[in-house]
Structure formats: C-alpha cells, structure tokens
Length: 307
Image (cartoon, rainbow, N blue to C red; front, side):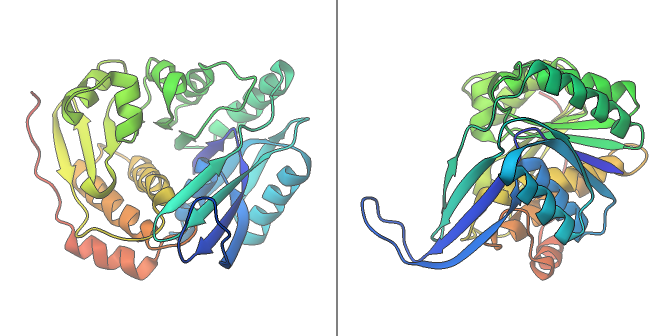
C-alpha cells in the first residue's frame, strides 16, 4: 500500500477563464471544486492507475468535512487526524497557464500533532511507501517531515519527500529514499548554480536520491551512482499545478516495486505522467490516453556517471 500524507489539506477551487487580466472582471467558463493538497493529488493519480493507496493528514471544520466527503465519493480511502481549526481553501485560475492562491491553513496544536503521529505510525505498518508532500500548516515545527520520515522508516516503509524551505532541508537529514524538489525549491535548499551540482549538494544532505522537476525542461534524477535527464516530447499548454504531484505518484509507484529502482524506466514513466497531468484542467487528474502516448514517445534516458 502507498500512504500519502497531506498535513495542510485543502478544498481546491479551480476557475477556467479565457484570459487572466489584472484589475478586471472575468467570466468563468467552468468551476471545479474538490479535495486537494499535494498528497491528495498524488493519491488521485495513483487511484486512477488502480494502485492501492490510502490518504491521511489533518482536516477540520466545514471545509475539512467537504474534503473527506469528496474523497469518499471518489472511492479513495482516507483516515485523517482531526483538528480544531478549519481546513484551508485554494483557488486556481486556469487560462492556458495557472495562477494559484494558497491560504496558509489552520494552526495545529501540540496535542493534535501528538495524536496524528500515533495514527501515522499505525498506518505505516501496512504501507510499503509513504509520500510526504506539501506545505506545513501553522503550529507545526519545521522538522515535522523529519519526524514522520523517521517514523515511517522505523516501520519499514520507503519515503518520498516533496517539500520546500526548512521542511525540506530538515527532512533530508532523516534520509528519505527520494527527495523531489522542483527547480525553485532546489535553489532555495541547495543554493544557486547548475541544477545537477545543486542536486548533488542536496544528495549529500541525506536522501538516497534526488529527482528535480524542471517544468518544460523535464526531470533530472541524481543518485550516488550517476544521473539521468529526461524531457517531455514537446512543450505543452495547460494547467501545470498538478504536474509535480504526478511525478511524485509515478516515483511512489516505482518505489513500491520490490528490489532496486529502475531509474531510466521510472523517470520516463514520471515524465509521461507529468505531461499527461498538464493536459488536465484540474490538479490530481491525468489524461490516460495521453499518458500512454507520451510513454511511447519518451525514451529512457542513458545514465551519466557521477561527477
């Protein structure tokens, strides 16, 4: 089973418009509202591929109830920890590209965190892979993902960490199996410079591997044994907000397989899944036919020796 963790779950609202013009009114072509947050989006992609997945995290208030109800309607299993505050909402405006407004989320108390860690350790006993992704809500210490990584590894689960700022930097020391920053997150965590050099600095901080999402430039995977770069077949127009979550879903599925990870195959699969996600107007969805087509077009990358 793959367990996805969304500590700052959200009720996502997506508006589709013809064009986004500051300081003006817009006619909305379509509105989508459903449970979101990066870990929830990862779970949706995995569920669409018939992977065994369970969602956990923290929810509260009316928005939290809507998040739980939406996942239930979608047939995606979930066991959340309850908090006193009300879960956040996010708004994404899609007009060929995407503009996102993220609320900070509710404050989490020390007691709520203690209770959640107990639930998390229980769920990890049945998980082969744990995906820790997204922002931390107010009230949690920046080493929260480091604590969860240690809990998951104690229970024998592999861990993928997709975070930013101090949550990423401190989480690396707990030695996740894969750290998956995008290019901007990588620069904040490892400093400026060529992407591969920055990724190797991040690798030295503890994870077994680093995979960098580079938008239209594709993915870079870096391990102690070498590196692999893979690009999408063409530049795509659409909603890129769920592309990184699709990459995390593909990598989690690869980690779930027993034995050593097939890096060329895993990265080609992740690139195809990411490209298919861009074509969907809503984060957490992929176009299955586009995914299969992209998978045929994207060549498995050749390894480059470590520098």
